[in-house]
Image (cartoon, one colour):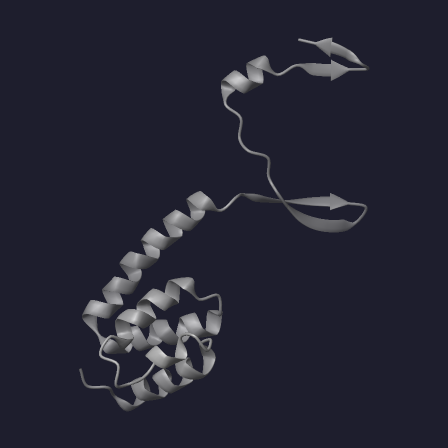
Length: 122
């Protein structure tokens, strides 16, 4: 694959932004560079780094551009299933973000007892 000048500049910028454990693989001489960057794109928390990698893969062309979108959809679905829902609560003017309680099925609601002034009410 031939790297253009904008692609080379993006690789240099990405290399500056990635953590030290990833830097050895981010080199123009690495034939697996784009595949490794596509994998790192999903693990990365830095929005700027993600944007740079996405732009590089778009400049690279067809196979890497589509690989990023397909893997992104799969990763988002997996994260959404594993991630607990968050809700905001306001107490005395302070806004906090807390995990929402797990959803109960209808069976749990029918078995649940309510207590009013120390007495069980069904």
